[in-house]
Image (cartoon, rainbow, N blue to C red):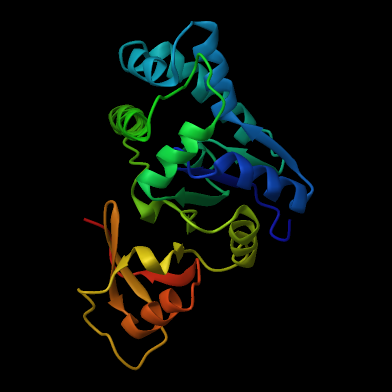
Length: 246
């Protein structure tokens, strides 16, 4: 790794964190650790789903304390790693922090396509959509209450990448592009997901700046460049965040 820093990856459920983190670890020649795998194993041992364990963790802080201690120990080890974890960005202070996002319906379809297990299984896209949203919100609230850390705030990250249509190879390539770049967040967003109706400065510039009102992006600058990218079938467009999100 050029800058000697670990890379920590979190993001939406169903956004492809596991696939991207494995690919990055291979390309960088360093070890990958998945805290999500550990969490799912904890749920399975208790005969719970991942959502049920999340809800249980809201009442029993021993679960979070155990995972926190583990992540803290890993962060202090000094080993260069790729870490797949929804809260590693909070503990790995000096790491390159990557956040993956995806369209909720796409994430639900991906979750539905996974082999059924005692940890997480759904019978329909609608059920998966509701289950993923509930699980994600449970985590978001718990992280805010216990750590003052909102995983949905894009300003927490160095790189934000949209996996709605982009494949793991393209996402990994984009992350590698900016490993040594100045602090971000550097946005790589699907142009088809950007609302163009609110662009304040639309014409005559290739610079793309986006506003964010969770879960939607809207164009602040670069309307024409975004529209052209969408027409050309590009899956990602490079952008910057215009202002702190609402």
